[in-house]
Image (cartoon, rainbow, N blue to C red; front, side, top):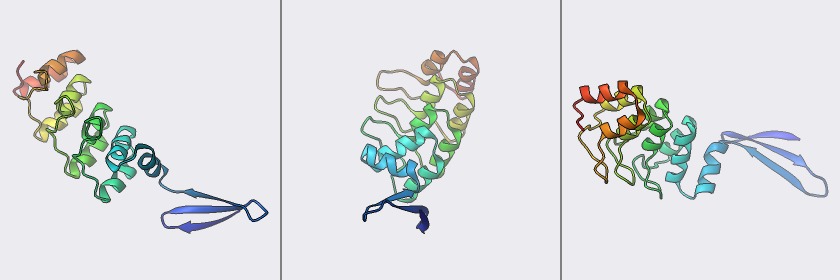
Length: 166
């Protein structure tokens, strides 16, 4: 077996005899697999946002993936990162221009998702970046209604202090 550098990854070549060889490339597997498995760059960004893979997210965004584009299920990378409570990913997406008030397929915003999941730190982060508290989803549900589902009084208080109403 011999190793050689190929760009950013390493390539290993194993002689299998009779002219057959096995080439194994170790690279940004978390980046390569989602692109081929999910078919598009936005789907790949959604996957890495869910997985919290910051290097892969940076690589996709550096390639020009639209941070605000919705996937085939109507979700944004920001909404997915918020759902999974990954503040570092949320920060990266904001640094790259994510729209704090973009809604998913049902109109729920990142703030609604954070409130529903009972993430006070995330709620405060989103509020500090201009998340609107006076919006409703496609069914007329407010951010306070989402917060009440979590049962987190601290989240409800944060939202009320920010001016949210039922």
